[in-house]
Image (cartoon, rainbow, N blue to C red; front, top):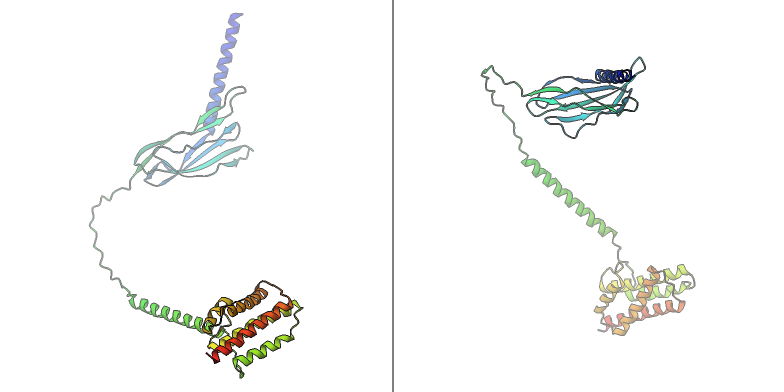
Length: 311
């Protein structure tokens, strides 16, 4: 009985070993390593094709970060190949090169297959292969070669082109500046010309302001805009300047030439700032305030006229 048990154990071990060898042999037969060349010049590339069956495959090749004496130029994505017997295989093409002269071995790469039931996965390696890397063969003929004749190169002088380009650029800048300043002069509002004297024209314009309805918001705004314009027109004609684009601060500075008392200048500033508030801040003063602003500006015009005629 003991001998029979020992015999059965040896038979089981033997069958298992045989089956393992058969499986290993089968995997090695189906795991293919194909190269298109094994002798290259420095820098030339080798196409390495790896192919393995899908049956039992659990983990495909993982390329190392670096391989001694070799560089991986490109690693294509693994692709599936279908056969007529409906079996499938996985295939990957890797492009490698080398810049070290000599005879080098490209190492084996591990592929993992499922083992027998209850056993650990089986690792099968691809076939390593040798690569001879050499320089281009030297010319051993030692033949003398003729010296090529001197080629006459025509040199083009760009000096006058630079001069012409500079002149054209200068003319263009001059033309643009002329257009800019000429347009600015045209856009500037012209000083109104009237047959009346500055004082008479201002008084007549102030009198016409009585036609506005100071209870209507739109007419209040127009009333104060015209009030400021009347004063700017009067002072501009008296001083021979265009003051329509000037601010209230600029107008008060211009009034220094008239030499009015500070109280009158303060009243003028109050009236002009009221017109600014209506124009820019949408302020709506009472009718009494609007009339008061007109009276103050009329008084300043009269004082200015008196000062200029009786210095």
